[in-house]
Image (cartoon, rainbow, N blue to C red):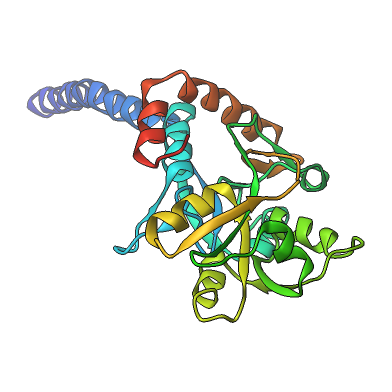
Length: 267
């Protein structure tokens, strides 16, 4: 009888322990399921001009990627559920990098030209630019003289300005030599020492150049159509394009948009 009573007690004890552990196990499973279902923010790579393009996207003295477009796309990412990593890429190779999926988007002051739109899809426009020629402050030459008297004009390769000047140089009466650089900064280093006589660029870049160097000036605006800036994505990435457009609309309606424009002196 004692052995039977002991056996019954053991069975009841094990059953009680099992009842006590079951809720704990159920709670653990619920926690694990909740964790597994929590969506993880995707990190997308934004390609920026490797030579720097202030005030839109550049690396500051502390090595941090900053700029109008940098902060804009980061704000959009937070609203639309993705993180952003910035990757400098040589500008002339930035669209091939996008097509090869080395980057996911280009948010770095890119003109949304018809030629580029054959290879990428652009977001809604958010800024308009023109093309200008920067010369030394003591230069007496007019824009027309700069283009017709065998002057050397620098430009960043792969840009809208470079394409325009290449086409312009082939027209009757045009006599200038085009010197291409990896960045506008490099061309501006050659201007004061006389290696070139002028440098063509977006008016947005010229605005930053004139802030840093009081010994240069804009001699004139090229007779070229104004260009819209837009963010670029791959042709097959309709989902990301929609997120960027939706986020851009939210941003432009938010007070932060005006704060960004003021911070980076973007008209």
